[in-house]
Image 1 (cartoon, rainbow, N blue to C red):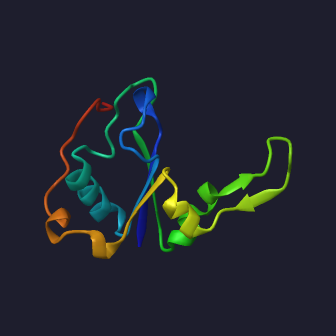
Image 2: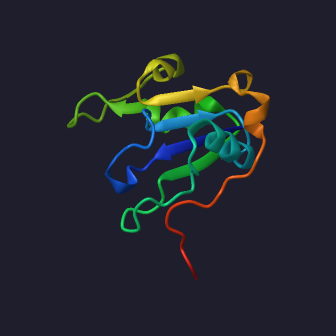
Length: 121
């Protein structure tokens, strides 16, 4: 299982160096790993007009989960679509892929605190 954290530029900037962070874990576990690794809640809302800091989704395959972000059009006016290889995408400055064997046991531990603005109903 993989979880994708897509930085939405809430507040006007990236929260980490990469816009796309993929963690090889279920969403619940990946949120804890994310917090332990980066020190902030991935569900945080930095700016109420911009919305959540990250769009978060989960998938069984890294290839399928990255497909939309690896696809691009050759030119603005062209309808010809190109798909970047997963290897190329992983080397790009825009993506960070954290595989299971790169996760320290202690990064699975703990709880994620509430941070930023909280929507009240």
